Image (cartoon, rainbow, N blue to C red; front, side):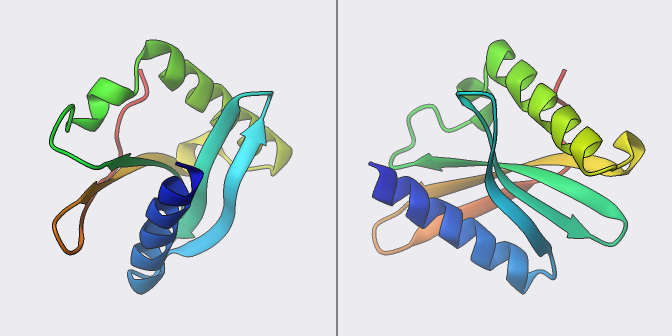
Length: 117
């Protein structure tokens, strides 16, 4: 299963690079189970990205897979990263990239500036 998630993150990173995002970090860990998949910059924003992979249409909306506790953990991880790296919270954004397996390829959707509350 880890191989599939790695492939999804690599697809997301490739997409971001093609769209002029600068990748700062991947799989940033804060605490034992808290992780931010991708941290990037574009223009004057630091962007924290959660990657969601689906092999079918079941539970397709990413909001269904990021419940309240997960959002809290993501928010705390972002706050810690910003404190550690002296990043102003006013210059950040949270995005979600969904990747859905299709017959011969993948469908990638980028949701920008999503709320964490």
